[in-house]
Length: 448
Image (cartoon, rainbow, N blue to C red; front, side):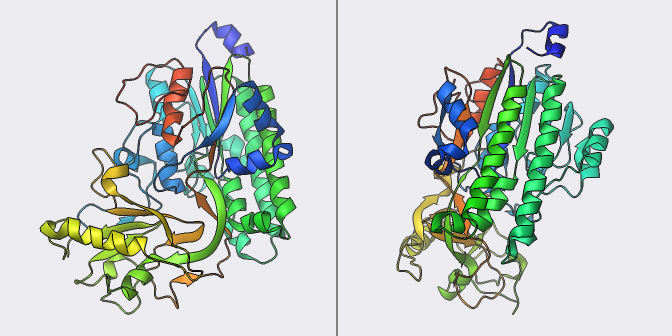
């Protein structure tokens, strides 16, 4: 028990959640010597592979993990979402998340929360003890609250994200250096505020592993030049988690988890280019770059990652698919997607799922009609601009998100991580905090 907790004389249980964006459970299981901390948590408590959500895209995953609800409840489906009744799109931010986060529920229960670098949280919430927003925040000055917190982060070379443009270069040295500096600065800040010991809930996210995996996963799986660099980077991350674990007071339960795993990327796949060649979409502009350029006779369009929408009368401004033909048209598109093959002859789709199968809630109006969960190697993009082909094997990224390879580690002897998914994390954290919630508040269930 920490000094501050002893002074306040509280017996309230406390929790620290460390998120690792893009941590692959398979990577941990196959390289235990690289992950002694995570292996120790699994031995002392529980650890295992969990499923992500559909779609397994970070902008959708983090709202779901932190609310315990599917995108139909959060209202966030991906990096780019569509306005209701419009072809206009927007990039979801924190205020677009329509369900309370775990720290909101903690604050409502009279607890203090420190929240650091969770994606899709900009602007920072003034109701939270201290908060620095994560991915997509414009700059540190706007992302952090309160003043003392912001000033410390600015003085300590804290970075909101890794410069992914460096990963596009053939020589990954500068990229790796920047990723490591970002990781180390973030860990230093996490440890500082863990040791402050003035919070009931601590949430901090390392996003650099996702960036490293996107550009170096091919080297890892194929035994390439940067394979050992990827493992060394993850070893450093595990060591940081170990330092945080050691710094935690004895009354704090540590939970470590990721939103998705990783697998080998072999083709960037431009879904709207495929739709155009298959006769589903046409454009009013010769150089289309958004939904606004879709022609009046388009029957379908796609948004990243692998989200397919029918252009429905009465739902879209220029919809052409009559409501009475919706199911037949969707079945036709589903069949085309299921029979779609890549240059290697393999099916592009592992599964094609209907909207009502995976999206439920008051904010399902912008849900895609179909979502493709791709097979290994096919990373599904939107691709509005004209492309020379549907499949591009020469993109700079060699790693793609995996739905069934997320990871969760709970440093608690009563935890069970069997048949679990991302939606179970939030109720687990609240159960560990001894915060009551309704049976229908979440799409997942506590693992403790």
